[in-house]
Length: 164
Ligand SMILES: [Mg+2]
Image 1 (spheres, rainbow, N blue to C red):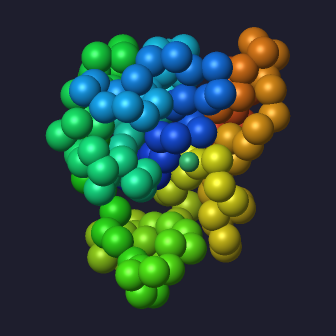
Image 2: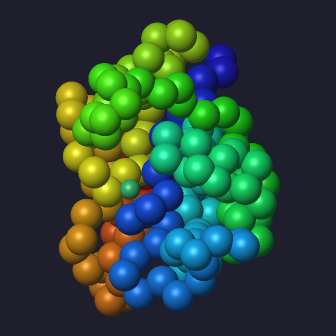
């Protein structure tokens, strides 16, 4: 029997960086991906085995997938390539309200992914997906940092039916 892999919907800002992050994205002025949080992500993905990692972050548009992959590797993520990105939904050009919940649902529908396989790492509540999300809000973890914490890794493993 084979078990279908977990599909990790990965956000970056607020998950892999926080207000204490000092690294900047390569060649850019905005905040980058923080090795501190990448270490937590690496541990989670290693425990999940061979999850399918899908970029749901706005990084997929700017600076784009290639830059996100480069930055993730540079900041310490190994052995877990980004498999794909979610599509983009927008109401109209002037409307930037988040539609990530629909983008994730679209992706799952297009790829025949059952929601029970989905793990969302995001610092924005994803409407309708609370049961599949580890919410990386502004709470400060035991290590004194926001973003993805050791506590979130425990939460994520439990959500995926694994012993932390
Ligand atoms: Mg975010």
